[in-house]
Amino acid sequence: MPLMHWKVFVNGKAVVSILAVLALLIASRADAAPLHLKVVDKTGAAFPDVLVIVKSLEGKGEIARALTDTTGNVPGRELSPGLYRVIATCPYGICETKVQEFYVKDAPVQLELTVDVSPTRGEGDVVEIGPSRSLKVQVIDRDGRPARLAPVLVRDSDAQHERWYKTDSDGGTTVELPEGQVTVVVLYGGTITSKALSGATIDGLKTKGTPLSIHIGNGQESSISKPVSSESTLLHESGHVDPPKQQ
Image 1 (cartoon, rainbow, N blue to C red):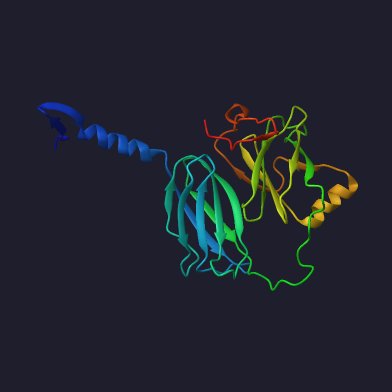
Image 2 (cartoon, rainbow, N blue to C red; image 1 turned 120 degrees about the vertical axis):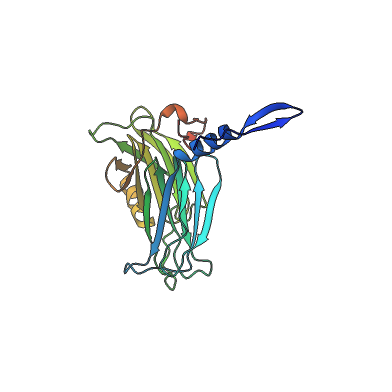
């Protein structure tokens, strides 16, 4: 059967082609990739009733939120290429909040988050970071050379406090630390490399006066579609940068 080509007329003039609109809609979804996400506990068992929030780190805000079902899954959703963050938390505080950044290209994304049950907290469970809030970070590429102009994200465990930086020509940058456990995320060479630091680890680095060394490819790593260009970030006078955008 021949393809029907419909047009909308206003005052006797054709203003839009229905076929063209359908083509645009199909093209807009062609680059989207399905996200499949599951939350489990430390034993690997499904963790129901966990609130999962997906946010864009490229200025699009919150994308979706849903509670996990009895199998630990949330409804699948298609995402356009870009940098995202997923937050898994329990509305009633029965589990620890888990935060993870991930990148979407054009292939299906499978994520499994392991969420810990909240412990009974007592005095001494939380390690406080000392008065100095700064720490030197040194990023090394896969060949052992300084990773220059690499975007670096520093955030707390709940992603309530976060700030972007960029390494200098020697691969280093000085960052300000939020309270509690800190996660440092580096985008470089087509990968996301992240490292979680406890208060005790941070205190040890400060006591020794040594920088935090992050080697690309070591730590929690996920592949991304292409290297993030340093030109896609905006460097501020304070030394931190806006979140990088996909080019």
